[in-house]
Image 1 (cartoon, each protein chain N blue to C red):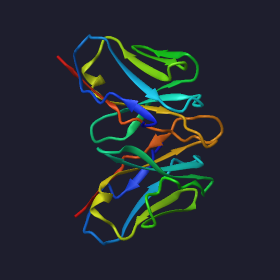
Image 2: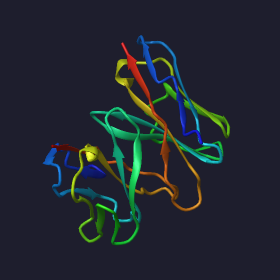
Image 3: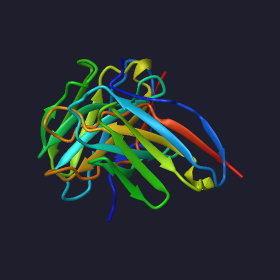
Length: 114
Length: 111
């Protein structure tokens, strides 16, 4: 079975540009999480979707960040405009809901904003 | 105070050694706890779950002390392949599977 798929794996952009990160969760998983990892702040939850509906977006840093999940097999995280402090590794994770089950992480997107 | 605190390490140990990491958490309502392993430049992967006082899986033992609000991870007979960062993650509030990750403890096992 394919795991969580993320694209691109690496993104280098200039400050002010729009960045879109993509995620395909594991088929059959109905919970999806976007995380950001930096040396300074560690692994932080940005937003959580259940059955394609955003449930908790309290971790989204500011209005420059937005996330969508138009269907069960696709989600995007958009940053517009990007800033150098957004440089981080962004992980997507998926999970089946109902009790606690393992969260499976994608390989991450390493974002560098110059 | 951070919600989850871990000693960043690194812990440098020889092969065959026993090593233990502690993780303290601030939310006394947390009921479930997890240890994830993260290799360099890779994604985190679940290592162990702890729902009651502890859990053991081969060379790995996780223990929970609710009174003192900490969980520990013990690795016996360390292997070179155990070198990684170990992330502690209590299940947070909110009524869903929200994990609160610690910053991680780095382990380096040398020959």
